[in-house]
Image 1 (cartoon, rainbow, N blue to C red):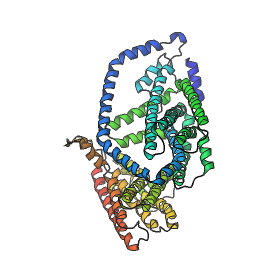
Image 2: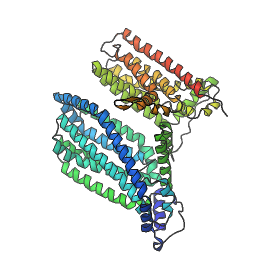
Image 3: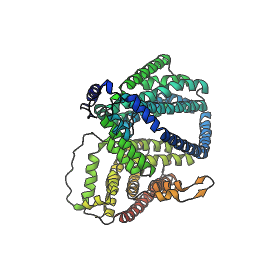
Image 4: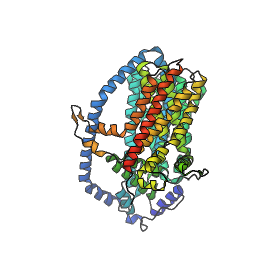
Length: 573
């Protein structure tokens, strides 16, 4: 491809001319074979070291998976066998399978499109972007191997997931392993390839990326509706018309039909769906291979820088820095929202006003918190129907989802502690500001929880109107405590705590990192699960223990937040 053709292709995608990579060159100046041959020779030693490092890493991951995952896997299989022994369980799973399969396929597409906003399937090292692409070499020869590697890795992951799905159907008793594996395979191969081509389309230009940012809230809402449809279908409330439309509306439904046929579901036209899936995947991959060389250098450079930042900070366990780098890339080019609230009359309300304005200007954060709240409420409803230790486990899962909901609303507290010098604007000390940062998450989280509790109250669970909003203040206090934890204690990773199962230092680090979350969830689980407040016909006296637990936990977490904030706040200079 000539330089002029490259620029024309980039302009048609991006709306702007690509930056000049040097003087224009002709076919006679093409040095692609020599350049790539030189790079292969120079990289041979580096490639050997990289392969050895990857082998050691894979060996360590395999040991960890076998050592710690075999017991969990065995118990999971046993539990699944007990569930499959019940007559109604297998039938409920078969009824929910169409919506579940469409949900998984759509979720893969959403994740691939969002991933393309900061990384993408064509990820080239920074030195290749800065030097190699500026030479008289064909861009497609440089970029196509990167796309091929991503597509292969995604396909391998899809095939493994397909095998896992076939094994699950066999354990549940819905299909034999051989036929199930064969009919799972098209979905495991084609859906990852389609996701890779979708991600390439998003990576190539600013307009598709902008569309992804605009449509993400609606896509998440669609995924939520699909999850609700699966839950309703499991209980017997299905809509044949809706399922038929979903199964024929696109690749997400075409890939599901062979699996439904293997599980004994309604999928009479699955051979036609399979043919459409294979033809669509072949066309999409052929198109992607043809246009992979038109990804603008500016976008490649930005994604390479973000990926390098994330990789470097992950090795130092700086998860917050990695998240900020990804968020910055995801928000690149997104239009800002300029909304204001009336200024407060008292200087003591400045922090609360600032948090409210920040939340008003980031509606996606509030929408995400609302969706997490809905998921927590649905899980809590399941916990109410259970008994014993199973109820406690599901309740802990519901409270964990509630923690994520409220934590989405506490971003300003994290921004405050990313650099403590920012607190110089506040009329209050850092410790007082951190306490005030818990007010908006607690109030908004309580409102979301109150709205989510209305269906429970309409069905006789009036206790939910008190208990669900009551969880928001402890979660808000735990979120600001986590924000004030200070620099990452990487020294905890090398304590040398030798055990028969290996070095336990990593678990000490994880315990330190997740201490606010574990404290809040464990305390509220004990307060709610052991008080009898979730039992049918619970009396008012049963509500006393959850209330006392929530009040005491909130006070203790805020006290710990003040102490940590005082340690963080040093002289500003």
